[in-house]
Image (tube, rainbow, N blue to C red; front, side, top):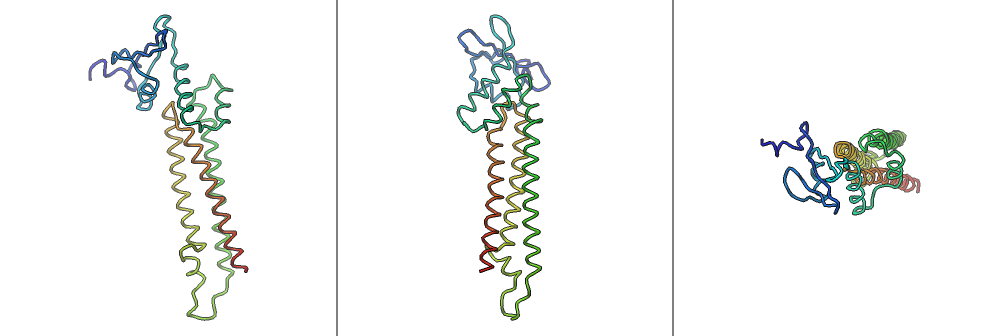
Length: 216
């Protein structure tokens, strides 16, 4: 690997990008002008970059990365306001540190709450099934058959449990990517957590409706 190719590789010297007075950004390794989107792509690939003012040699890396995050958010407009406020309140803290301290615990809390609610629903369904008397006629469908039928409570719970596990994996992956990549995936992470909570609420509503229909 040549010296220019080594620049910016993790563990090597950072790739230097100069910012001129006209706000243009110049990649000194590839000898070409680059955009904020291209710098964001470099960071996501694990390349270390350093942005410096061409005239004063001032390090503008933090300012430029903040601008990248701002531009990304303008396109999506999905990052929760609470997250944006916390970032502004802690300007001296790195985004990675903020994610590890503030975002990850919230994800864990929501996931634990979702697991707890699903566990209660499973226990409730099991207890109700145990209380049901066996049907007097052998040819009548059993309670277990009814529950396991398409759309039945047991099948609904199994499907919801599988969906919960899938969402847990997705959220874990979002957190991992957000920590690894400075640009992060916070907006997508917030959406995943909101969907997970909504799915659990929908599950509870469906089970309540099933219980009411049994009582009629």
